[in-house]
Length: 371
Ligand code: MUC
Ligand code: MG
Image (cartoon, rainbow, N blue to C red; front, side, top):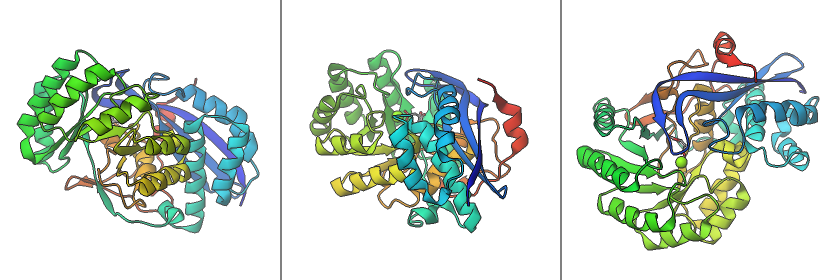
């Protein structure tokens, strides 16, 4: 089998409500989709999501599309996608960084190969350890009463009992009070966690994390700026509440440095941050070897990207902090004919062939745009 073509689409999907993060408010979520075809016209589809153009990470959707078309695509046309790890390694020699772009290309290769063999993609990564995984919901409406209502609705409908609050924007003390009110309302029925998205300094972190720990919060995600591993290690050893690395944890080299310096208690995996599915498994191996529990993160992917992450996370035994693969629930519309299933506080891992999602090409056409 040979790769015959590779097309990349920038797709803007509307969300059901504004989603507030430290660096950006999402009202339309931009995903990048790739369609890879073999010479006999079989298709493999991949997706990565970005947040707020280039405001969350260096790679904007436009940069992903442009760099794939100009630099990555010519390297792989005519090659056999079954060698996806070797091809990713070869791409890495010619293209530095660009991890989201590389992850997108690798996911399309994996989908194509798995579909050709009529197997789920997770069989190419050692097979399944989980058929479903716990799934968090992010309360990010920006309003305490609305967030409490949303959390109670999630508990009543058995949709989610893990809640993440984005508290990197605005006054830290007010945000901590907002979180503690939500924890009081949810009580023992739910786990409340916070994501600061790098917005605090060490001094702010010291008093805020103490208050959050005393208020019953279960997990503190990325309080400090991504390069401050020294600060993250101090916080990890000072507090009982676990500190999780998200933006500071991307590549396997970063994973090794964090593990070596104790710069996090938990790893937030995300397939695009690492540069693909194979690289994410390698990050997971570093966590496993270091005794660090894992969490299945999201960049807020649509149904296709969620299936990609869910299938990969399903092959990792130590996802003990659950996942946050709620993306499709935040979108008003999706790009697949079938949908991701949720229930009993979990996401059901889609079955194959490939990532198990049937692409709705009309939807892609409808929501896609030029650069
Ligand atoms: C992040 O930083 O974790 C994931 C969930 C969410 O609400 O935002 C993203 C990004
Ligand atoms: Mg995060």
